[in-house]
Amino acid sequence: MMVRQKIAKRSISLFLSMLLVSVCLLGCNKDAAENKSSGSTEEDKIQIGMSFDSFVIERWQRDRDVFVSMAKELGAEVNVQNANGDIEEQKKQIDYFIKKGMDAIVVVCIDSDSLQDSVKKAKDAGIVVVAYDRLINNANVDLYISFDNEKVGNMMGQAFVDAGLNDGKVIMICGSPSDNNVPLVEKGFRDVMNGSNNEIIDCIYADGWKAEIAYEYMSDNTGIVNEADAIMCGNDDLASRVVHALAERRLAGRKLVVGQDADLEACQRIVEGSQLMTVYKPIEKLAKQAAVSTIELVQTHELSDNDVDISEIDDGSFIVPYLKIEPQSVTEDNINEVIIKNGFHSKEDVYRFVPDKMPQ
Figure 1 (cartoon, rainbow, N blue to C red):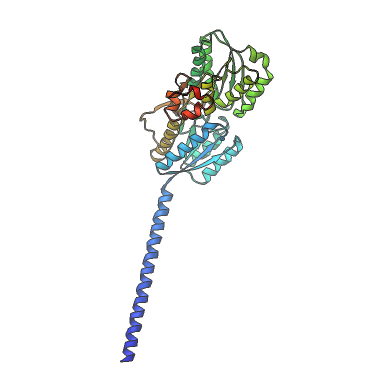
Figure 2: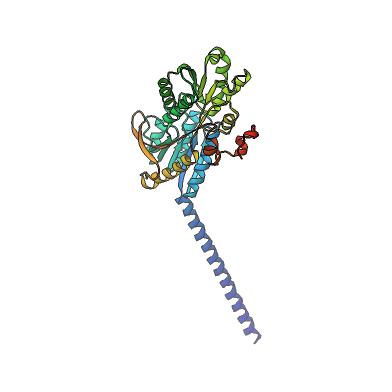
């Protein structure tokens, strides 16, 4: 009787052990299946490589954050690289993205004339290439998305005219000569100046968008600066050094200064009276649309034209799709409407140094 009980107990124990092993195996298999499913989901995500010129200019950080956020919302992953103004480093980054098998590469180029071979290698590998804000010349990119840069120049010139400049003398401190947008802005500005009989008495270019070049020019050319009635700056970073140099000679606010990008300091200078205007470029709209269009091109190889102006532009060798976003001129008269109500900068930040001017 005792022997039978022992056998029965051993049988039950063996059965329970086998049952426990089966449950464990089932759980492991389930976990493995879930991990495999999760892994395949990650692999299925669209992979986008994004190479920036640098983050020295204030706006690029905002572009990056909005693009990455929108791409993630649409189920894509973005690998952001910073070339720190080094074109050879940017070429290496594009090569890296090609080796990683990215679905798309978005480039804020340093030099518009130096990336043709890199773009060709990417396209030969079946990768979508988007030129963000700056056109890559002779490269046949899948999309160029930017603002209407000639219109930006028009707005700068018109701000001078609207402020009463006529038969005046103007200095142009333009951006980097390797940036394809610079000649477009320059053309738009010169068109307005020529139509209003204003004379451009000097024109220089800031290599690599280095703002110190603007300050050095102002310091080394006091005679021309004193003669000038107005100074056109390629962006607000250049304008900051120009206004600083003018302030050192107690000329800030006495000469008209314009820029672009609607940097916070530029908006502060506008309400203070040391900068006449800036150009607001709706970066959030540009970056979001860039993310949407990049993913569209990966998925369907086509662009939808919902709420965007899709045209074409000649890159020097090819006609490429050009998606244009409209800029807005910003002066003291409309800064509250365009900048503050849009949430681009807060009222408290814009009026920080002139609180008595702050609207209620």
